[in-house]
Image (cartoon, rainbow, N blue to C red; front, side, top):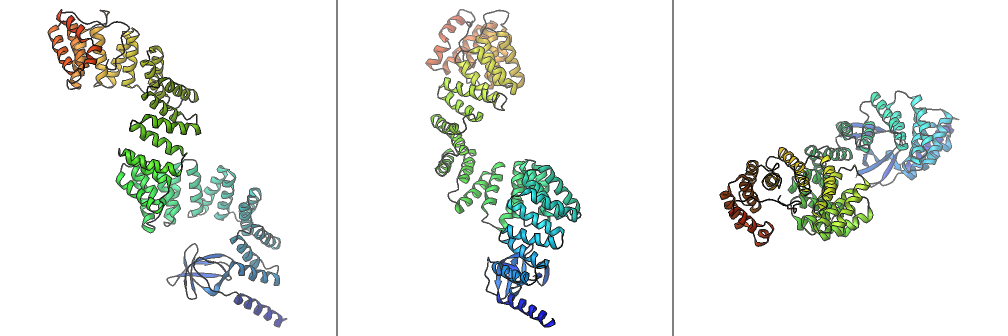
Length: 579
């Protein structure tokens, strides 16, 4: 019997030696015995039989491998995955109840994604003797196969058998996370960290859930913990940097991306997101340097052309911005973000027809996009296509009356209706626009509608509120002065106040606006100072071209002031952009 036992030992030893081979960088190998990984003459970790290792350096019979921590091992301690299966299978054939060999082979199956075979080996181990790690590993296999019910059942058993092992709760949390049961997943990660405050996987996965839920503050808090435990974690450092940008902490984000680039100067992700961080801080030159670097590495990356184009746009370099957006769209022709940005560039270049063309293409893909409907309407307005613009604005307000941009839609539509002479409808729109904010400009424009409807009281109230908000708002002072000076009803007119507001408007404009001088002349006429009225009207005429003189009725006013008579506006008055 003793001789037979020795023969078996010799056969097994010979089997392992028969698999020895030459290895190269990039090979994945398997430990055939318990291995102590060494670094600078010191042990840095242990690896169990059956565990896979990736070779990163070969020096004779020494291999540097990637493990939780990189280090050196002897080539004689490992074999290829294929040979490992043969090796452990031979051992199992000689002793089918050896749980260690079953575990080692199961781990090899796992390393090549053969989950059914791994499950079979773990099940055999459980039949011999149930241990928590068998349920844990088998649960992992079920999870990778997508059978989450069986995975969670196995993890539940693992937790029951090892209630103090944080890793069991971590793995069950991962399964819950995959099923979308986020509440239970977070609870497991929390419990795991109560048991082991240095369990990186729990911080990482809880942070990823926070990130998915847009809870950036808590995501960053968990990513902080990961990085403090593993400063070399490039992925988590990148994610933290991206969160920090969105949290308005771009300077901190730049530190993260720069640390990544210190290790890998060609990291396109770090370069790209650092460029975004610089851009968000207004450091456009630095942003452009990073985007340029990315495009040297990835010359056909549409998103980088898009981002660089936005940066050029922010610096008012419209031609270069347009070139980048053209390049981005040549790569990804229907990208709505690219089309939207190019439309904005065209609008700033006052090429409204081209802006409309891009927005047409965009709105074919997302026809009810409120911001883009409003954007197209603003370009159509500049093209004097009022009916089409009003249609877009009305559709936007129908799609989402409570949209953040609804006040803007009402404001633009109100302007279009005012210019068209539909003052009642314009007032309704301006009222809605003012619900968003008490804008001095909108109050002024609404007052013009009231004036044209013969409602001076409402007009005056709006102009006074406009001035209260912005005491130096020229148009409001001028509008108020014009009503006080020229309104047909005596109870409305106030020559003294007309002069005060008209002079203030002229002072704010450095006495260079002829229509403001014309208002001041009318104010002096109302107050009875006709010499000043004539003087300021003459000064206004000197700054007017012939067309404006006709519109301002200067000949008629000259006659009135010469005869010491004030000017009176007819009702309804013609709408004027200055009054």
